[in-house]
Image 1 (cartoon, rainbow, N blue to C red):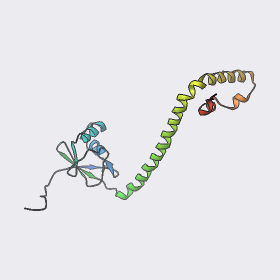
Image 2 (image 1 turned 60 degrees about the horizontal axis):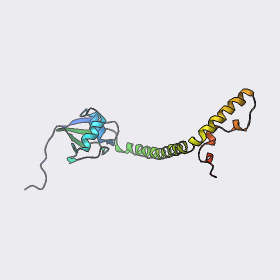
Image 3 (image 1 turned 180 degrees about the horizontal axis):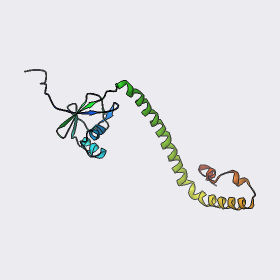
Image 4 (image 1 turned 180 degrees about the vertical axis):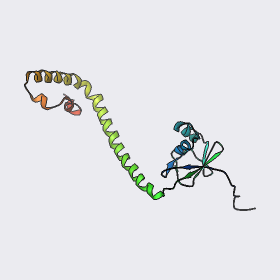
Length: 162
């Protein structure tokens, strides 16, 4: 008969956080509702956690001051005294490392490709040139091979076709 849902008073445990937004699984860890992050992520993925009355299956869902989390018949209220505007630089910082991660992830891939393809052919020659360098260093004579390191001979330039 009433269009508005009834207001129900519940008792919630306050979880104070230093910065917002905070990820859902971290709130469960801070509340000691779970023993670890893996258990928290599992509980969220299996649908045992509700946020603001709605079932939530995203482990990294962002929570803000005043959000209500329900888990295992317990209620947790996110409390953060820091204003939301402070988290804007944090988001910018997060976007910068993703660019760095892309650069970092692309360079190891290139290195892996170089190691996987070029090194089998250059390992023998690199070892041989190292031995030659040792012999020349003991003799005190420096040749053109000492100017270039064995690592610089690797990669795509080390592969000669025909």
